Length: 115
Image 1: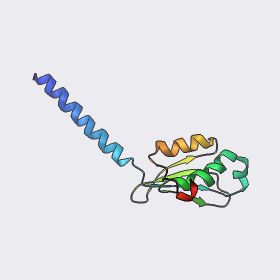
Image 2: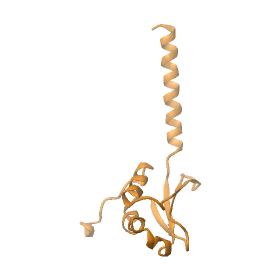
Image 3: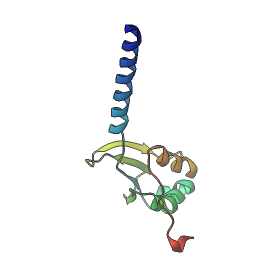
């Protein structure tokens, strides 16, 4: 191998290692959807359906009732440190689900009584 090829290979290898470390750091361990359970949520039928019908089906995602709060997705790392907070106000039900999936959360298998 030519010296320039070796340098290029090593540079590429270091870049791959650095990207792997960054993506490992951005893993979310769990999430909460924070919102009131009525009030403003009644004006957001897609978000309300997402919270009460879809969120319970996700692993490591819980609903947290906060009186008067606008709906937000809060993402945490393994140390329970808040990493990201995203508003759900303008999203459709499908966009809310896609957001959770894009952040690495998976739906659990349906229970036998749900089939």
